Image 1 (tube, rainbow, N blue to C red):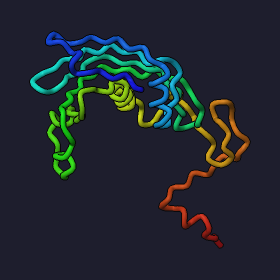
Image 2: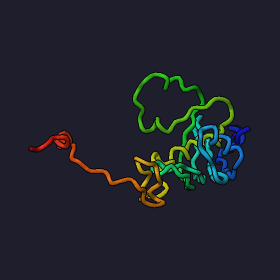
Image 3: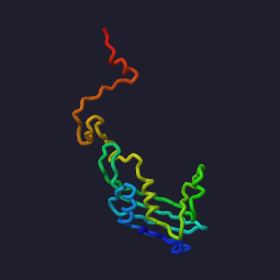
Image 4: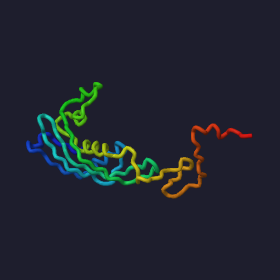
Length: 176
């Protein structure tokens, strides 16, 4: 189903793969709640290095993200260069709790004689997605009282009194 690279197809010089994929990448993305707007594009170089596989390349995808302030959908291009090291075997060693070295953070385990390339590309795109997506840097967000999108105009809510929290209790104090 997904774009699989067979280890036997990787020559000693390596294997270069150009990817322009829409349907399968969209399927992976939608299963994880991400909407794609165009095909993912990538160029990857795959090499076998002493029992491991190294995948290095560049990936780009156009996604629909939801702004964290105003909740509007907006288009964003996410792209990154990456290097991934894959080692055959189960991840049993990582099941135990231990602190990983920076080198171990780049290791991915796989089983069998194939590597699912689109899964790796989606993971790389996911890592580059903003943690707090904003439609624009100066997005004003929503009014906390009425919910109006402040990017589209001011709301009719009266301005909030800003009181120093240290003096908030004095607000109800009556003076004779």
